[in-house]
Length: 169
Image 1: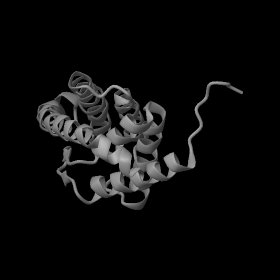
Image 2: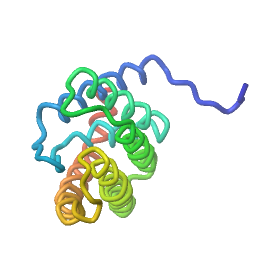
Image 3: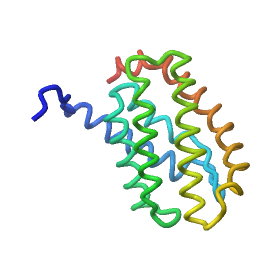
Image 4: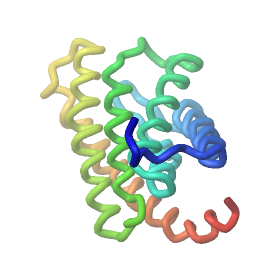
């Protein structure tokens, strides 16, 4: 067994469960959805998991919330590619753990939007709807710009509240 593996505490598990529930609510009920676009604040619980716990836990929160959300509140057929994207995006948000400067936040948002949304989710949408990848790109680029701005501002605001959140937790 690995000596350096970090165990997840009961307190972390409870917080992760609350973040999973919050992500499902924000994603499934409080987002604006169109055919191949979704704009909302469902990234905040995953980003908070990354900031508080690191890449492994935020990846776990992201994957579990995606699977539970897709199972309990399906919006279309389940495609494992979206869960893979959720995992990668969760891990990328984990890069904010212990280092959430403005430049790091900008870098993480760019990575999640380019890798997660623009490349991977566009591939999955192309497969799901049998639509050419390049035909989806213009609306996906618009979505990435809008969501990227919302993500950056939301995470920046959340980071400023972290000291208050940590005292409460």
